[in-house]
Image 1 (cartoon, one colour):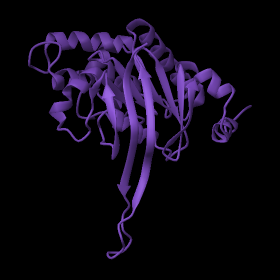
Image 2: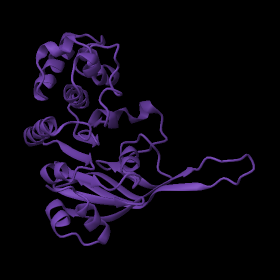
Image 3: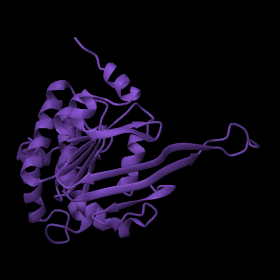
Image 4: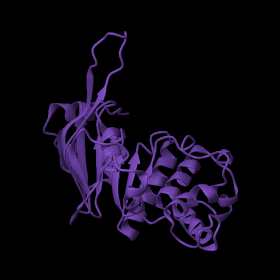
Length: 267
């Protein structure tokens, strides 16, 4: 498989806040010398404890943040997180992202049809220039069906849905423009086990049908084990271990990965 998304030597530092006015400025390192490859059609899981650099890494890969050092390329084209938003429209057309808290990422003043169709309108896709065009309505209904929601959901507001249904709406919005790459930043962690399994099944079906490439950040190793072909283990801003999911989770080579696996609750 060809490499769709790659990062080389990625580093990210932030200026730490001062506790008093004359204190020298100090730097906090979030990422340090990270290399990653995501092959087209694959599913890659990124795991690690809180603060290990997982979210920072995916933000840099999507051009939502700029690396202090290193380079990112999508399908061979450089991704510059410092570029103006309009210059990254080509990347937004080819990628979608789902965040952890569905309610915080959905505008409570908009109906579901407007929320889901927003990428089509913002990127100038699927129909004429009006946000409510017939082509866009048709696409919204189709993608809502893909994530297990009825067509009448389009006329309702986010507060009328459960947490699991809201995450389906967020997923529909990420998929409505038919991206090649879907990135999930802890998208299932706030859901109960049954809903999590349902959405996981829908992601697997979409991947099989459309050849979708997936990058999944998760604390839930069960999600990674069931969805992902490869896994990257992050520790203190570095890659501690990576490889095929089955091999890494069943035969971990580093002590940190073994501690992660040992921390999973068992009955």
